[in-house]
Image (cartoon, rainbow, N blue to C red):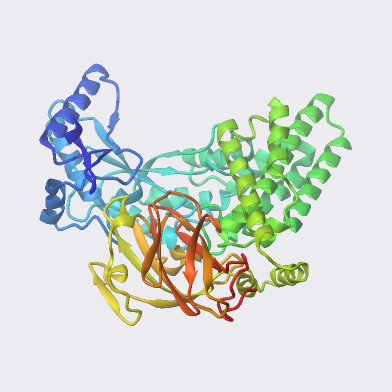
Length: 586
C-alpha cells in the first residue's frame, strides 16, 4: 500500500504515514485493538511516528492543515495538531472496548510542541523529548538565561494545560560522548520542576555501557523515589561507597566535569557545549586528581580486596578521562564554531585510545563498542581534516608562526582572513521548506538578489544583515544568528564580495556546510551539493573564473535539523588563499 505512506514533493514516499488516509486509520485501529485484545494487561500502546521529519505533503493532508488553521512549516511550525487529530480518531474508536488503556506517543523534533487547535483525547499520553540538539542538558530546564530550555519549559507548560499527565524522554547519558558527563546540577532541579508541571513518567537515553556517566542515573533514580531527597548526600554516598579512601579526590574529579557543563556559555552549541573549557590545563588537573586518588588508596589500611576493587574503578575512570581528551578537541572545534587552536595543540590520538579499548575487555563497560568506535574514528577523521586544511594552505613557515600567535592570543578573525576564509558577509534567514528537499526550493534571494530589500514570509519579513565571522575557520553558525527560530528544514542565504587584483585566472572555491549547499558566482550557479553532513572546511571544491575586481558569491544552505553552519574561502590558480580585505593572495 504505497498510498498509505507520506507523499513527498518529488513524488516519492517516506516511511511516515499519510494520516488523512481513511485506510491508514482503519489499519491503525485494527492493529492497536488486536494488541490490547491479546495483551489485556498491557497499559499502553505507542503511536509514535518514525524518527524523521518527512511528513505527508499530499493535497488532503495540506488541506487539513489549512482547515484547522495550522501551518506546520515555518519558524515555529509543528505537525502536532495533524498527528494528535489522527491519534484522537484512533482513541475514539477504541475507548468503548479499552477505556482504561493509554495511547502514548513521542512529542519529538517537529511535533514536540503542544497542539494549537486540537485538544488531545483523554487516552493520549505525550512523551516530550528533551533532545540535546534542540534543547540543553547543561543547564536546568527552568534556568531563565537558557533560551533553548526556556522553549522546552514553555512546551511542558503547554502540554500540562491539555493533558492529565505527561512523560518526558531525556538524555542523561550521551549517545556520542563517552567521557564523564556531569549534569547532576541540572537533574536535581529538573525532576522536581517537571513533576510540578504534570510529569508522571520518565525514561532516558544512554549508550549501552555507561560507567563514566552512572552518577547521573543514580541521582535520578533516588529522586524518582523522593523528590525531596538530599542530593548532596546522595552524591557523597556514591563516591564513598565506590571509592572509599579516594572519595575526596574522585569527588573533586567529578566536580570538574560538573563545573564545565554548568558553566557552558548560553550562546554555544548546547549538544556537547560542555567541552568548551576542556583544555590542556583541565586535563592536567583531572590527571593529577586521579593520581592523588590512586595514592590515597595505596596508603590506606583497607583490605587488599577492597583496594584492588577501588583501584580498578579509578583505572576505568582514567580511561574515561582519556576518551574525553581524545574527543574534546574536535568537539570544541564544532561547539565553538571553528576553534582550531585546541585541534592543533591536541596530544591524545583517538586511535591510540581505541586500540587501548580493543586490547582490554575490562574497559568495555566504559564505552559502547559500536557507538564509541564511530565517535573516536569520527574525531580522528575530523582532526585529520582540520590539520590537512591547515597543512594544505599555501603559506610560508613564518606566516604560519604568525597565525599560530594570532590563535594563541585569541585573534581568530585575523587568523581566518590570513587563511583565506571569507569573514564579512550579509546573511538572510530563515526560509522554510516542508520536507527534506529544501535545497530545491527557489526562495526569493536566489530568484532576484537585492541586498537592500526584505522578503515577506508567513513568519515575518526577512532582511539582510551584516555578519562578521569570529573564528579561525570562518564558520557561520546560523543557529546563533537566529536563536529563537527552528532550524528544522530551514534555509539561510549568505552573500559576500571578494575583491581580486591578481591576473585573470581560474580560481577555486572551497567550502563546507551543514547540510546541503548551493553556490552562485557572479549570478551563475556553480554548485549544488544535496548532502547531509557535519560542517568541515574545504568539503567541496569548485573551479570558477575569477574576475579582476569584485567577485560576488551567493551561498544557500539547507539544514534538516541540529547544527546549521557553513564556511568558505577562495584561492587563486596558484592555490594561494585570497585575502577578502586586500584582494591579493596571502
